[in-house]
Amino acid sequence: MSSSKKSRIVKFKTSDDKTFEVEEAVAVQFETIKSMIDYVCANDCTIPLPNVNAKTLAMVVEWCKKHADERDQLMEVDVDEAPGAVLYDLLVAATYLRVEDLIHRVSQRVSKMVIEIGKLPEEEDVRKTINIKSDFPPQVEEELRKLRRTLGPLSDVLVLFVSSGLLE
Amino acid sequence: MSSSPTGTRKSGEGERKKMANMRNRDLPEEMLVEILSRVPVKCLVRFRCVCKSWYALSTNPHFITKHLACATSHNHHRGAILKGWGWDQWVALGHLQPHVSTLSNETLELSGDVDLTQLFQDEVVRLLVVGLCNGILCFAGTLRKNPKLYGGDYDHVVLWNPATRESKMLPQMDIPTSTSCTSNFGFGIDPKTNDYKVVRIMSFDSHCEVVVYSLSTNSWRVIDSSPSPSYSIDLPFHPSYLNGVHHWWACEKEDEEEEIPDNRFLISFDMSNEVFQEVLRPPAVGYVYGDIAVINDSVTLILPYMCDVKKWFEIWVLNESGVERTWTKIFTIEDIFHRWDLIQLREDGLVVLRTHEACSLVLYDPETQELRDLRIYEPDCQLVTYTETLVSLNGPGNLVEQQDNS
Image (cartoon, rainbow over all chains, first blue to last red; front, side, top):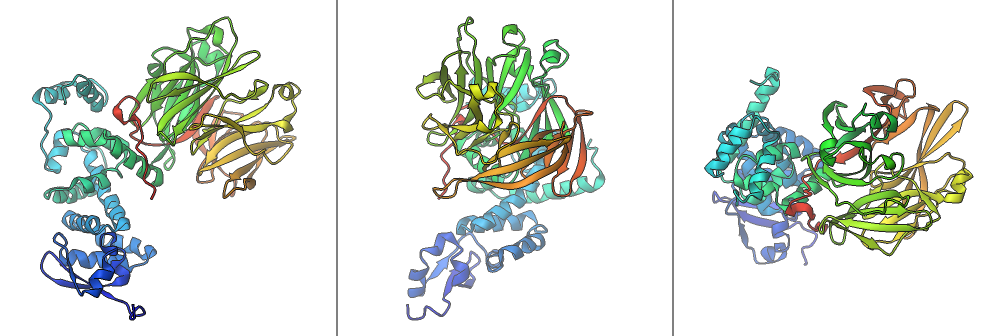
């Protein structure tokens, strides 16, 4: 603890094999590794991050360095314009490192996209957009199609299916 | 097919493309939960029809709890306006059926119009929102087929989640028809068991009986605790449940008969311990009746004062920091025509008033004294702000999971 005045450096190795030096003040914001900082610094270890690449880690570090009020701005510039793939990487990294605030901000941002998808008129369009297939049994699917225009919210129909054991 | 302007449509498509980009990779459940818990209920209810796993997620009690926490802290709030709730003659004559519409707190747009008959499975002549908790509204109503109750008791209780449109009619209770009874209600969640409860205080001529309904058992039971039979308790007009406790105004029946206004007090019911208590006596004197409400997580008093044709309201909140409990006046709503009514105190400090002349609702800013006509004309209505939640009344999700506040 002799060098307590001096800021320590925590070393990371990213998924694309780059070594990254992060100041302790930033690294303590990563809940996942917070408790191991002392050990890592004392033993000069490098923490491997198998699912975070260098570009994404740089973004996370920049985010952590900013004050809360500046983060809004960073979000607008870097995240709002970021294509989905970048947001995905960012969310994976934030979740892995457990940077709660960043998880919230990215999730909030992605939820806006999800809301847009929710506005699509047909269920099939929703499935196509997010690249998933309906896994309801064929008879449920058929009933859904038949009933969708005569009954109210489709979810009501599903509740019926569940209660009749069709969906189990 | 979409009629939205090209601008929004285009940006909508952009958003969807980005999402498609994300979906090309596998989204771990943990991340999906984080994202979907920030999506409004309406959208999630739609997604239930997309695939099994999304259906399963949006009906999962853990997810519902997580979504509730997000919705509460991120202002997915809406106003529910109950119309024709107690206009006895008109409703009883069949001129008016109680309806609920939704008023957006931001855009002030009115939408939807739900006929509450379907909730009660019968015609209702009197209706009141008696409680509100986690997006669930609790209604007490009187059915048309029970005319002896008109102007008297409420005999049916219904819980309703306006966001998912799910409702539940509570089991009926046998009350001897020969006795005259008036009921009061409270609704909330027991924070220890996370079970939703309705408390019904039945006042008979010389005694009081209290029954508690719990959603987990779907039944009523009599409890030992009861307020003094000498109390007259006001039905709630504003939602007044907070942190496991429901609140009401009360007074001694004798004082009420002699119209002594200063002797009014508050009583509360603890949803966990199931006991009644008197709350710290309200501060000021000289007001003509008052209302109690819960605004911004504080028990709030709305105290009206009148002088000639002017009226003003003092708004007091109960501070509960530490051991000491005190009442603090937070603001005054000045210069209101004496026949106008206060319909709602909003969390943003604005208030909704009902004008006497046209029975129209206006949004009023007590600071700037600016008025904005909401273009809603209702002689009798109630307006409450609720959070849109997935809380389920019939499914396994009706128990809210213990929230981890650590």
